[in-house]
Amino acid sequence: MKKIQILDTTLRDGEQTPGVALGASEKLEIAQCLAKLKVDAIEAGFPVASAGDFKAVSAVAEKIKGCVISALARASEHDIDIARDALKKAEQARIHTFIATSDIHMQHKLKMTPEEVLQATKKAVCYARNFVEQIEFSAEDASRSDWDFLCRVYETAIAAGATIINVPDTVGYATPEEFGGMIKYLHENISNMDKAIISVHCHNDLGLAVANSLAAIRNGATQIECTINGLGERAGNTALEELVMALRTKQSAYQAECNIDSKQIYRASRLVSTLAGVVVQPNKAVVGDNAFAHESGIHQHGVLNNPLTYEIMSPESIGISRNSIVLGKHSGKHAFEEKLVSLGYELSSEEINKLFIRFKDLADKKKVIFDRDIEALVAEKASFKPEWFRLLYHQVNSSNKARATAVVSLESSSGELEAVSFGDGPIDAVFKAVEKATGLKITLKDFQLKAVTSGMDALGEATIWIEHEGKVFSGRGLSTDVIEASVRGYVSAINGMLSVCGMPDKEE
Image (cartoon, rainbow, N blue to C red; front, side, top):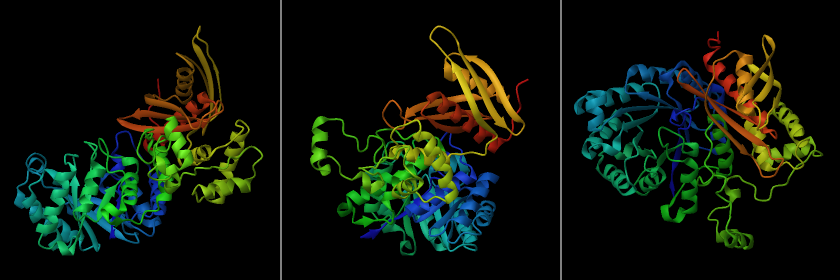
């Protein structure tokens, strides 16, 4: 079996998803989850991009052990210096430097000749080699570059010290046949290919990122760059969960395997979805809510007799328990801890104590607590922001004959804040009351509300997106009361905004 390395770039390319802004603590939590998933490398960020990104990469480099920590840098000494500094405390460090190689990029973006690109490649890799042993070099927009020129660029990079050459389909332009053929050509025509490995980084603009990555594996690639849930620029990247389960399900076809602990996949998907504020579509392959749901009576009958009739992988293989033991208000702390362990969570005593209090509050409102409810509570814990404001209580009066009225009370560093407001419906009224109480100008971008499980007493999960100075921030709230879930999510989004931007100007 050929061993395939998995580099996860959720913290770098995944964060470039429109509307996603992860803080250092959130990136560290995702990195810890990725380490449990047993990825081979984590691309922790682009340190030169901002002070916050540098801080996040440094935190991941210091705290995460057992896998390579990579930082992205353009082909410039300044970028490489910043990446080196961010990676100082990494157990295993890798600098990933890149430059564009397609005619359109060289002419219109870089305004460089091919020879100048070759010289910049050599200079950047040689410089990075002074600081780390592992160097990855990417030819940006490789899939639209001249193949023979690519061979020259990669030969130059390997001769200068690159240990990994990355072939990106930067704009998601390639098809599997084209991309597989290019990887084969590079593998056979780069004169010093025996001194490095081929990596690929595919985008999903045509929905072919996973297919292109699999085609690359067939033709000599041994590292695949992915993100959880396929997050990333535009239509996103190769989805880690889809690639891994494709390799596992079709192992005989690809004669390849990876080190990923697939039972951690579902938990990683939920965590990233929560912290990034990007809801996983129900029909998403592998991790969507419908991935193991069977609506047709024929399908249901077959699955009940033998799951393999309509399931090519088991839910247990990605960390979903098929026969979950439910908990209730009489369940004790020990049973709650056992449930957390069975779901794959490793939490501190303090975190368990806080979650147990939330569990008991929920159990007083719901007769039965399902695994999805527990997962939602843990995910809510992961999305906690520094609390500039905390909801104390809310009260809403609403009817179809009169405007809704809402009263909200918030706790803040300056004491209790209370406001009353009217609105076009209960959600509008309560959001306006929060704005009035905080004195902030809030632009609501999007609002989604869904049930975590089925039933009249199901938990409501509200996800809120707000905008400030061109940046989008998300928040999430849980409650069996959908109005309470909504206002909790709104306050969480505001706290997230303030933790990054500080207190903005208030309304006059």
